[in-house]
Length: 119
View 1 (cartoon, rainbow, N blue to C red):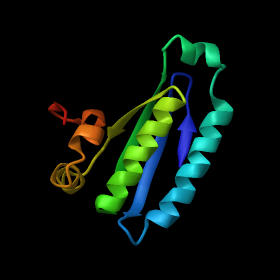
View 2 (cartoon, rainbow, N blue to C red; view 1 turned 90 degrees about the vertical axis):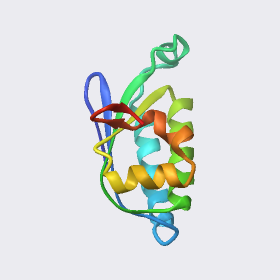
View 3 (cartoon, helix red, strand yellow; view 1 turned 90 degrees about the horizontal axis):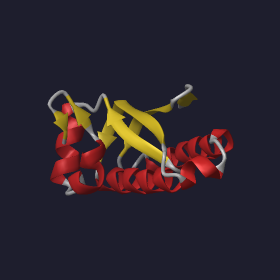
View 4 (tube, one colour; view 1 turned 45 degrees about the vertical axis):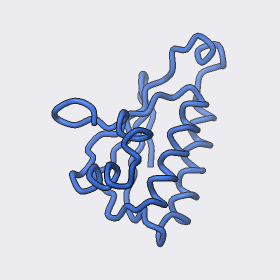
């Protein structure tokens, strides 16, 4: 679900992010956060505010509802607390529309990269 490179972390999100699938996604995100924590540089880097970039690929997300948006928002907050700067990429149009329709564009939209820039 994720891979580290020298200057960024790549996280791939997929599957069902609706009420029916968030329980499974929670376990996946816990594993990602634990692995990221183990591989982060020491706290000095985080203290300087130089955060590590993270590309979050969303191509594989099949379903998304308010529950999934809430979980994604929490995930973003936890990444930031760990000094990781998330950037959602490869976001399907229907997922972007749902993020906006559910009112999460403020929490998630500034992290969503599109061809035109950031949502």
